Length: 224
Image (cartoon, rainbow, N blue to C red; front, side, top):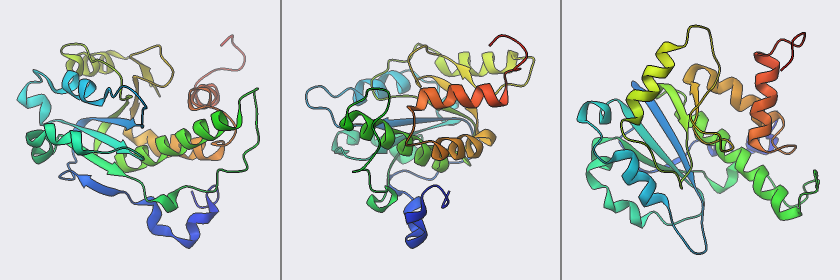
């Protein structure tokens, strides 16, 4: 990690989050990571959390944890979930400012503007930080966003689908939108994070995961 982010050698504590809310729950089946960003008009996070937690059976609440990654927004609205925070099903973390390298002189690629390149680069770093924090908490890690609506009984559907897979897998998809709804084995997260950090300046995260899958899973002698 320090090879790809050498500035961290001067501040090794920058890879540890500020835990704003949470009970440090571990040993669950499913960990869900939700990075949330500042929006000028609408805020979707509360609706997303309601859809994830509403009518969730107690046994499933006790076997999952939802991690909200906050980089630049207020968390005051999350006081709407005092029971979930107290029980440990909901955690809120933020990265130390020193975690991020200087993003002011990034090379523009793929016709993206300077702001777009900076945004996607920071997004890669955000995902990496969130995954590093989540890796020891449960069996599976599900990547979500702050503007999704979960289907009823989504946790059991995910567990059932994962259990039905007859061959070794690296990612299962529960959405066709970018990086949303990607399920990983927690044991694979260190490898995924290292790959993201290796190329975090070069491409968006959904392209990077496609490249990683091609390297790890695809047979180059067959059509992809």
